[in-house]
Image (cartoon, rainbow over all chains, first blue to last red; front, side, top):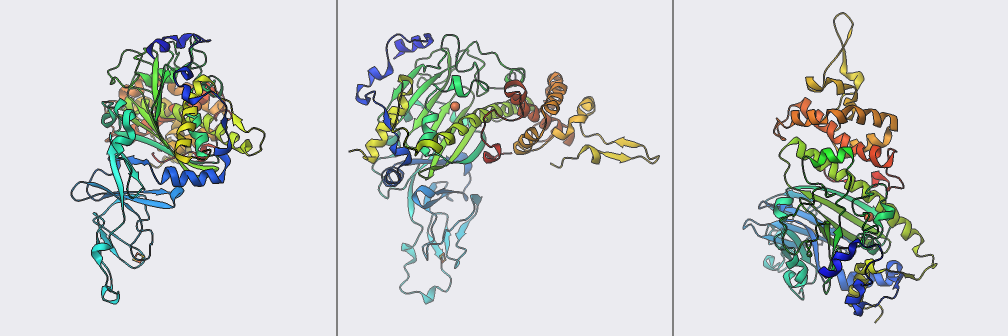
Length: 410
Length: 126
Ligand code: FES
Ligand SMILES: [Fe+2]
């Protein structure tokens, strides 16, 4: 792969294609049906979201015993309560009272000693055990020991909290992440996660339209020609060809080219004096682990790490960002965007983070428009397939993995 | 943080002369006409950007950019979590510079060209 990476500079390429290394994927156009079909959406719910490990937050969000976090998963009609117990252990439960199924915790986050249901006052400990039932004597053979909150499988990878709605997950989180997880070993997530800026938005688009747009760089030279005119494209790489692509059984990654000749704007230059930006300005060799920028190409900007089904962990030097795409309906998606930075120690560092998050956000404003415009004409029937080029191989791979789970065309 | 408008900042002296009440540190009084940009949250700063004309945005940008080296050097004396109120306002002015920079330097208009409705992209942070 390294030999191919050297060729990114050529506009026409060296005749070698990434698809040559993955003949099993073919090169045919991919179907649009999965983006508009209610039947497909229903299968995604059952065969993906109820089956696999899903990222729902970071450990920093619930550091202390008694801290809790609620994560609603409308795609599965579920709400998950994540809580750090008195023993320091992180546990996940269905956020559903054992009496008559009232949603137990209504706020998004907080800290407490116990959970009391608002409906009839049933009370649970931080470990999910039912501890108190008002007017208990009026019930019939109530076995409190068997009426705790319903547990949900939870585990942590590099500080990221995952849950699995399958009562008997078929594999551990470590097994599920496999080589993708290993490739990020040693990345300074803890240090970089001190500061988190985050946005949410509800888009009128299928969740895979979002995923597709953020796992290719072909669009950068066009959609982002104003906002990032020379950061990810350059004289020797006008179409943002990737430095490297890796496909795993479920997950995938791309090393994104960064233009060392990039000319910063005046405010960007100012910001860069005080801290690392999401747009790389310093291309001196970093001490990031071997799995990051795997070919160690000096013209490296960041790695896109796409974790199936809906979690992106895109890492750069000094900062990283994540996306979670949560389907609400076949044509609606709740999108969570987070950017992470080290703790700013000075006003200058804080200013540089502010600049970095503003440019990051404004670039995304360009992406979001296209996502909705695409969805708005998708059901017209004008086209039945998307045509993909070599540099859109991650999208093609995603289609393959989806079909592996959903089995719609089998 | 409560932001005073320029009107509210003027108080009457005994002789009936208006006297400006200063909101920024002494060295940076030249930026006081732009104190309206000293807003505490990204949402407010973005809203002000979108509600401003390019001329207003440009004059703020032109005024603060050449002062930034001095502004940051001044602010860097203070711990981030214990800044005097006037320094805090000055810091949020620098955040507004970050906010308007893309309008001035990239889009040449207040909002992102062909951009998504900014009010739908909701910051969960400040
Ligand atoms: S539903 Fe919770 S106490 Fe009745
Ligand atoms: Fe984009």
